[in-house]
Image 1 (spheres, helix red, strand yellow):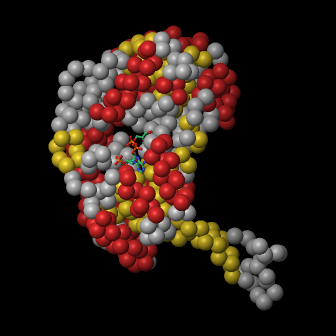
Image 2 (cartoon, rainbow, N blue to C red):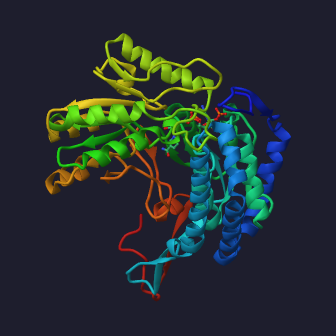
Image 3 (tube, rainbow, N blue to C red):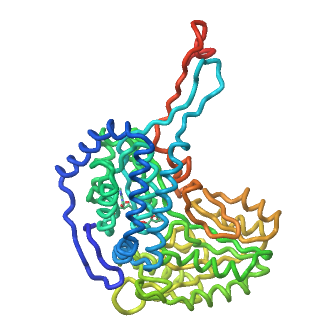
Length: 466
Ligand code: NAP
């Protein structure tokens, strides 16, 4: 895929970039390798000062940064401003909490001193997607840099301006040259970078296919990997729920980011007792959304990010229609420039349809009728994915049933799934492994070192060595 900005609102190519030649990649790897001993010796306080400065720069330049995001991948300008502000908040949070999250953990043993120490690993490669082009990178980079690691970013090929903006941001904030660098490379070069001895670990956020390739390359090189992959999150509505709110939040949870979020609600599973009422109100709200120019304040849903992405969504919906699904609204590619696709509601889904097993990465809601709560839980778990999940109920027993029973990395009750620095984020099953954010996230790219200082000459260190 060529590296360049194709404005999804117009379909026009705005800027293209020459990929980095081998020598340029080598220069960046070498710079990171050389910097690491010096960088890891910097104090948390120093790194926090740089991180807070980066947050201040983002806040000061918020509209300009947001403009780049909207131009490159089509999210509404309001959403782009929100994403930028969220990044600044997370940077501040990591700056404030990293030292405590990585504090030594003393252990109770016979030793004079025994403890667990967290140490940075070195340069970490981050292969990132375009859908939250700033946030996906920051939620890796802020903890990684605060822990004393270095970042090497291979961003998605359609958001090079955002990638370069991030490199410039960290540099301007005071981080030394080489602390965070962008590699303008294609996905075909990722395995070579992972194999390079100077790169210590890799994180990927993206599709299942990319996850498999990266995990394979990391496995061959015996390197740590974290994978944040796709999802087909359930949004379960039970009779005791506040239906009006479940409709409003359900629509938002599905069409956020023009329908292109890994944690978007994708499968709506509604109890039979409230199915007709919910479906009617939900479909009406979806059909009434304004689709259009993402820079227009009245727009709720902008274009999909790429022509290919739209073609994929359209093919999935067409396949469902051909196999007998009911398309209650949307479902047709509109005429005109740009990569628009309308909010769409699909019912009557059967197991042989592609949408039944694949992630749909666009504003398409699949609605399922459940006989009862147990049936709703069964449908919710009937997926290869296990990223987020949301359940709407005001009944204590139902809440327990779903919190315990949902096979997912995250369960939200009466709220849509979201990411925040205080809570770990990640999936199970085909949605990946490892966690980002919070203490779990910052420790993913730390070596865990056990330190044992014997109490005296007779302390053998263990009952039996192995
Ligand atoms: P993608 O095609 O997998 O691309 C993601 C990144 O991986 C890009 O930088 C891409 O580079 C690279 N890549 C693609 N194939 C690769 C390969 N074989 N080897 C190495 N790198 C490879 O995904 P996308 O379409 O951009 O993003 C949408 C997907 O990401 C969805 O499935 C979504 O659910 C998932 N996602 C997950 C999370 C999460 O936290 N769990 C968050 C956001 C998105 P090129 O652009 O150069 O191809």
